[in-house]
Image 1 (spheres, rainbow, N blue to C red):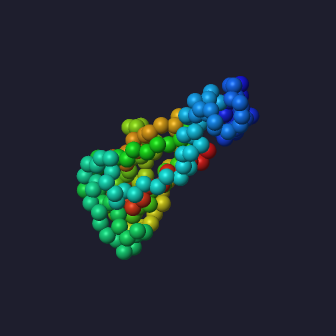
Image 2: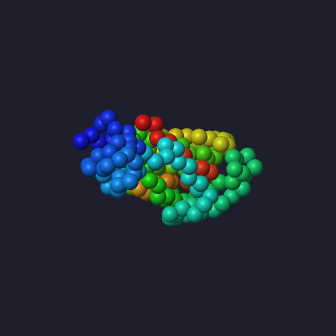
Image 3: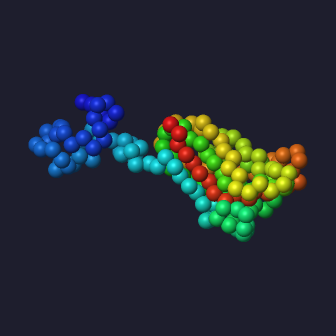
Length: 180
């Protein structure tokens, strides 16, 4: 019997398993040709935006909303300037290859942001700049998500550039983009 991805589309209404007619007159959701995972995979977004100005799942020393006339959306979430300040967000990601892009301000006192999925570092972003850089879009690419699941996205200020005077984070937006 063909499964999803083996010659039948997700919404194929050909009668199977004793159905008498086409359509969803029988309990098609429990048919072996339509799995819950396939339904979820087909409806998950490939682009996810997270607004860090809203309350995260958790935060430690990264929870001050500040205004900025130079930054997109005219605001950012400012960390407390201490090492290991962090914020977490729960997000459901489909299996595949992802990238993450942060919309932020780079500054002379900004830290290095560790990007983690379920506690595993996927890369770092150095937010240091000798003079302010508004609307910077640093990213990390080729993040493999092996199965569809809810992950905890953690952004953590784990270090600083040798030229930086602090561990601040100036975060305006988070974008997760599935690329394959």
